[in-house]
Structures are given as C-alpha cells and as structure tokens.
Length: 291
Image (cartoon, helix red, strand yellow):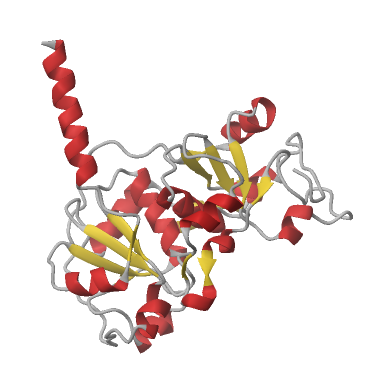
C-alpha cells in the first residue's frame, strides 16, 4: 500500500515537472500564443504612459507599486498581503488555470517581483518574457495602444507555494552559521558603504552580485548566456541555499529570477532587505569591498 502511494506521488511529480512553465519565454513563442485563452500577459513597464503609448496585444497593466506598501511605523517597504495579492490577480483576469507571462522595459526588473510573488503562492504556470518590451519592439513584433479589457475573476488559492521568502532571522542565521550564501544585488557603491554613515555597507559575508550582471542590454535587454552567469557565480551551485537582498527587495527579486532560470531550487528573497536590516542596531554591517 505504501509503495503504491509513493509511486503515485512520483508519477504526479514527474507529470507536473514535464508541464512546468519555463522561467523565460522568448518573443517567437509568445507571438504564437497571443490567441490562447489561458495566456494572460501582464505589462509591468516602468511608466504608466508607456502602456498607453503601446504594449503587447492583450496585455493587462500592473504597476510595480501595487505589489508593495509602506509598513508603519518604521517606513520599511514590504510586500502586500496575500489576500490583497489574490484580489489584484483576480482583477487582472488571472485564475489558477492561467499561464501568466510578465514583461517590462527594464530587463525584467519589475517583472521579476510578480514572478517571485506568484511562485511564493504556488501559482502553477508563470514565465517572464526575455527582453520584454525592448526586444519585442526590436524584433518588429506587433504592438497596440488600446487598453485590454479583461473580465475580473476569482483567484482561488490552492497547492503549496514555494518557500522563497527570507526573514530577518533567516539572514541572521546565514551570517552566524553560514546556512546560506548571501547575494547583494545592489551597486558596488552601496555595497561598500559610506564611512561617515555607519549603518551603510553590506551584510557580513554577503557577496556582491549586482542584478544587472544578468542582463545583456546591448542585445535588447535579454538575459546573458548561462555559461557567463555561472562563471560569475564562482562555483555557487544550484544545490546551495541562497538568499538575495538589496534595499527594498526590488533588485533582489531580479536576481532570484536569474537563479531560478539557472535551476536553483533553494533560493529566497529577503524582501525587506537593507531597508529593515539597517534599522536593527544589533545587526552587524560591514563596509568595504570584502565580504
């Protein structure tokens, strides 16, 4: 009886994996899916006016700021609650059966946040358009300026979400007991810190890995090839636990997207990032170029 149970679980896992949506899709694939009913394309370009000028056919609009809020009283920028997120998804016409394809005009910087959120709540199929609006335009693909009218639905939570969010305690454990590799997705200047400002710098032990290392801006904001990215990770393999952070979780989510595309399974985003960490008087901070 027990062997049949585990066999059934294994078959379910294999079938699910076979049908898992790819982390990235390209314009050629998406162009063929524009009329597929369960595909929902989400525009997360930086400026609302950009969507009004032109966007992908059928794309619904989601500004980045909708996914975050200011926590009181410390003014830390945090993610919205799950109930609010589910409401946002339903308003966009996204159901559990939807294959969500997200794009922006920033090399995936905004799109990565929604990708991370959807994996966190266990949405079955979510992908990011490689190169986003920039590559789509450079390839001469069709755009429109008519806002998409998507009927609202009720998003039904179900399944098990990915354990991909790190809290302050997780970060402290990584510092004290080396339970995970910390990747700082900010700029070198932010990582080094300012000597006259003691609560600037990086979390001790964190490796500097700016989010934009993963984007080939000269080729239309597409992702860099895997060999280049793996070399930049200097031996950090997919089996090693990783926690990414930045200032507010924005850039850290893009690094999360990069690692997920490289096959990393145990990767988390410290969503509150340095905005929270730097407010903790007992939390150690290091300045300089060395981890």
